[in-house]
Image 1: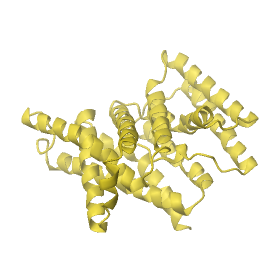
Image 2: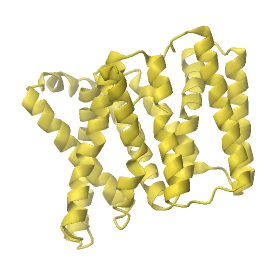
Image 3: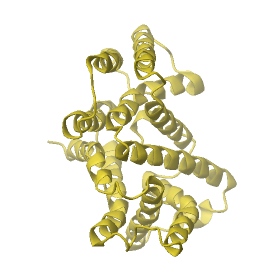
Image 4: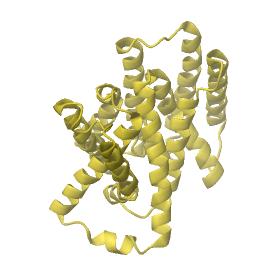
Length: 299
C-alpha cells in the first residue's frame, strides 16, 4: 500500500482513538489538560526543529504583523476546539463530539461557498439541506442545539479558513500557533502548581507522564497527516478523514456506553446520508476541491 495512504490512515486512526487517551486524564480539569497539550506540543516540535536546524523562518515571521495576526486568530480557534473536545470526551459526550467532525466537511463547504464563491451544485445543495435537517431534528431530540458538535465543526472550519490565508508550511505554522499560546498556558500551569491544585507531579507518575506525552500525541499524527497530504490526492484524504469520527462514534456507543436511542440514530442517519451524497457528488464530477479546509489537522 502507498506510504502516503498508510500515513493518512495512521493519522486519522490516532485522532479517532483520542477519546481513550483523554479519558485516562479525566481526573484532570480540561483547562489544565489543554495547557499541558499546548506546552508539550511546543516542546516536541521545537525539539524537531532544533534537530533539523530549521529556525530560519521564525525571525522573518515575528516581524510580519499580518502573519502574526493570522496565526494568533488560528491559535485561538484551535485552543477553543481542543478545549471543547477534551471537555466533551471527559464529560461523556464522545458521540456528540464525533458528530462535529462528521458535519465538519459540510461546514467547510459552506465556508467555501461564502468566502471563496464556490459553485453550489444540485447534489451538494441536497447534502447541505439534509445535514441541516438532521441537526434541527437532533436539536428537537436533545431539547437544545447539539452545541458541542456545532462548536467543534465551526471552530475547526474557521481555523481551516484562516489557515488558507497563512503562508507557512504545516510544521512551521503549528509551531507558531503553539508559541502564541505558550505564555498563557505556562502561566496558567505555574499558577495551578503554586496554588497546590495542579495535577502535574501531584497525581502520580502515570498522570504526569500522560500530560507530558500529550505533546507527542498531538504532533505525531499531524506529521503523518502532513506527509499524507503531500503524497496522495486530496480526494483520497477526503474519504480517509471519516475514519476519525467513525472511531469516535463507535467508542462512544460501544465502549463508553453513551445513550444512542433510535431517535438519535435517525438524526445521525440523515447527516450520514448527507455526507454520502456529498461524497458521491465529488466522485461523479471527478473534481478536486478548490480549498482544502476539510483536511486541516483536527482535534
